[in-house]
Image (cartoon, rainbow, N blue to C red; front, side, top):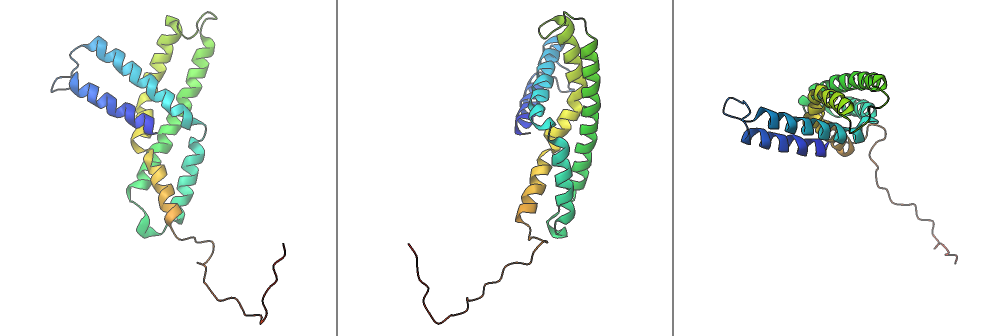
Amino acid sequence: MRDSQKILDSWDAYSDEHTDLDGWPYDEDAYGRRASLRDAATAEAFESVRDGAHYLLATAQIQLTHLPARTVQSRWVWQLGVLHEALDRLDALHEKWLETRDSLPADAHPGTPVFDDVLAAHYAEAWSSLDDWATHGHAIGDINTAARHAPSTLAPPPTTTAAPATGHAGTVRR
């Protein structure tokens, strides 16, 4: 998720530098190529999270319900909702991509225009959801940090008591 945030920050800097005050690009072709690179890099960065994303969200949701109310940020529930919706869209888009990829001609492979154009369109369609993960994914880590620092509800805090004196010294075996 950090990589996605770096990609987003880099894009924002590029966009600020290469658009006018109304947000229109100075060079639409160059801007479009750069956006396509952003989309692909963001999708690649998300791949390291994709397999565990559902688990991460479920864990964060459970942790959130067990946190003391005073430690919960009000935005976390909303952010988890955004991440759930984005992941649902990404899952649907991934299935659509697999179907599209499987329907390509046999000679279409990475590096051919047919394959690369369809893949770029897939990345462009997925970018908004990937951007949601880049923007709000840190909430999962924030919730986990709060959960690690919260007192456990499973066991009472340990108490220290002196060990009973037995009246004799223990022997040490070597």
